[in-house]
Image (cartoon, rainbow, N blue to C red; front, side, top):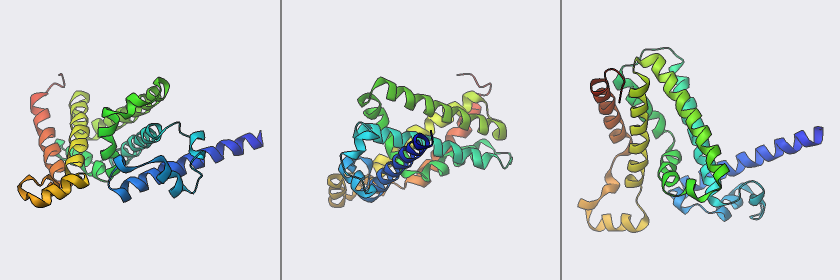
Length: 220
């Protein structure tokens, strides 16, 4: 039994090592689109064939990283809500923006999850991701509802907007090398100049204010 416990602990530690290496690779290379299993295993100090004992594919590894992002984002929001300070709708929007901006790789992954990652893994792995993501989402909304006075429906719409804005704006503000070179030649097309965090804060603050007007009773 002791040997089995050690084995479970070792597997959990190696899994965490791979997730940390994947996040570091995404940050170093400029996005998850450039992350490969080979680069992750090399950074983690593992033989490239060894990763298959933990993740069946690159897509499964990145989906696990997105799942971890959900957990960390939800925990960050809930931690700030524990202070008990009452939040205006504007402040709730800014809180979501700021906590998302602290997780650039998660923001990047939001687009990839919807476009490919969920569909390129097994149904059971997708089920696991959905289950944990919804748990994190619901815990986050409950925490905000307690301190903001906004309704569940208003906050659900606000969080959905936060995810959509963050995923879209991250891609625009971090173009591929080809687009970055093009924007250097034609500055007026330079979406690279988009300032991610200020734009995200402005739109989530405005969205929160709009939701308390358009959904005053909390019904969609």
